[in-house]
Amino acid sequence: MKLKKDFCFQSDSLVSIVLPTIHEVDLFRCFYPVFFHIQMLWELVLLGEALVVMAPSPAESSETVLALVSCISPLRFCSDFRPYFTIHDSEFKEYTTRTQAPPSVILGVTNPFFAKTLQHWPHIIRIGDMKQAGEVAKQMKVKKLKNLKTLDSKPGVYTAYKPYLNKDEEIIKQLQKGVQQKRPSAAQNAILRRYFLELTQSFIIPLERYVASLMPLQKSISPWKSPPQLRPFVQQDFMKTLEKAGPQLTSRLKGDWIGLYRHFLKSPNFDGWFRSRKREMTQKLEALHLEALCEEDLQQRIQKHTEVEVVDLVLKLKDKLSQAEREQLPVRPGTLSRLRSHIDAVILALPEDLQGILQKPPMS
Image (cartoon, rainbow, N blue to C red; front, side, top):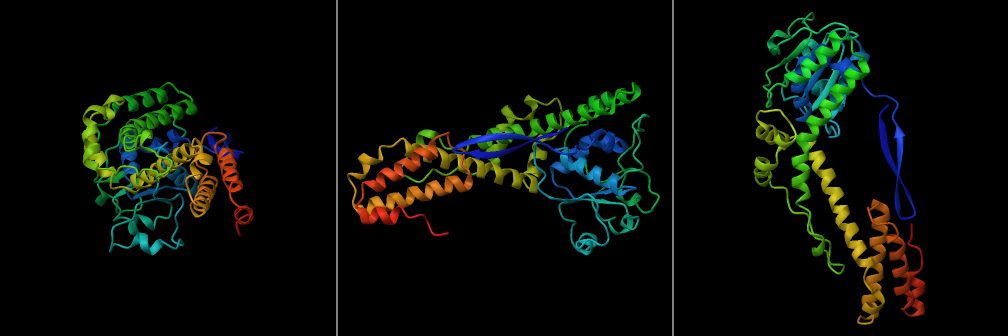
């Protein structure tokens, strides 16, 4: 069973709670009809390419789409995906029109009508009835899209896409051997999931390392200045880091990694990933700024300021406290309690009439 982490807040500390999810897709069973092409499918999903899965039933369509989306985990798939798309969906006209390129979405369909209406899509996976993986799958070549004309087209991958990375024969042999030796389905699934995980991690680690270098040094954070900004992501600078610290450090695969990264940096998955990382790092800077404020002797500092300046300080500190609670900033335990104490102490140093105003709870 897959475990998922959720979080709750208890006073100032972050408490991690492990919640089980109800269902985990059997990757090997889903990819078995096309498992000679799993690496290419991983690339297509990673790059957010428009993909159609044509399956015999809604269950097989849905499971295959969910398997595709999960194959780039722990990277989050940031485009749209429809496990079971029908002619009654509101986007039917948008997705079947030939006047514009298909959007970045993965569709799962069963209606034979789609074999014609979605024939212009760049990548189509056609699967037959899912077997119990009890026999060795036959080697299938990638088929050209023009061959997908009839309703009885054979199972396979129909695309003109050329993978950036060389094919990994080892994982294919390992899975084939498992089929021949009647290895349990759960074990085959675990092998494939681990393979995808390691492949994705090898790809994402150089990006994580570069983005971490965009973080300002902690010594540059001053409690009396706005938190410093993250340095911008410069594609050329990132590409330079790949020569010495690229995926070749953790992956045995050869190929055009540079080309794969260039394509990925234009994809919705990169945009979603970078937005998330930027938000996390900005919140970390805000948290460090807040912690630096709490280390200051505010009582001594307000001696040198006018009442107006002290009131302004109180309002700013209250804003910082509200932001920390609202955004659940990753501050050290006890930080918010110390900030509240600082605010209360500064208010008490003011005349009584101002104390009454500043101690009133904010209007909701």
